[in-house]
Length: 271
Image (cartoon, rainbow, N blue to C red; front, side):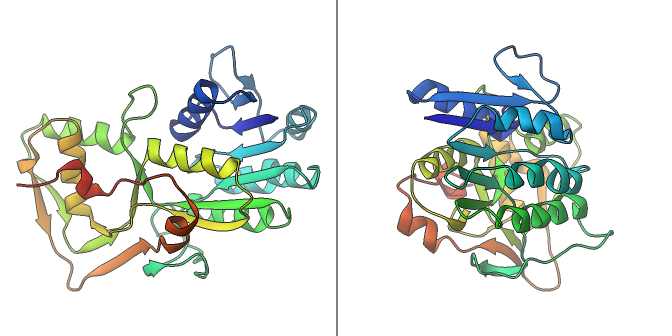
């Protein structure tokens, strides 16, 4: 069997690719746009001719794991659309999306909320919503909606928020995070393991993948500090007028997957 990871040089894609190369006897291929890693296929998914070269590999499973805050809409409308339009019906397509809804305990049936220009990451989230609509045209699809991804990847590299937090910790300044705004989070290695498990399962549709418990921004950043072994006392809480939630329901994931998704509390976040 042939498995193709599109975006195999990225934070999540690299972790999926290397875990599969380590553990699977299948043929594993990965793509990149600019990476100099010789084992990856260098392609631009905005180029339809490049996409057709990928399809000619005749993969049995395609995992789309691209993150681009600025070009996500174009990547969906051009590259992803070209893949779906030229894909054999038996090919399994796993699309890594994001949290697209709003509110507390969002199920897989939540209505996607398109963002306006002044909303956080509007280009990226709207591009993922567009991508989900395109992927649904292919019957053998699975859309993964992860919580916010964090942690050290396969190569031990930290996510961008961890890097930023480390820099702030060196300034001696206080860093304020909201203590009553809650979201869902997932460790990058756990998410990669879940996606690999799903690659070999006969599950279609949509699945949320994150920790079960909603976590405040304040507690999350304290967790990131502890993961790096730095004193988290410089992180201080602020509060909204009322509690706000933006978290995922994980009942489906817990029912159908064996992969364990760590909770933020599993990192021993205690005073």
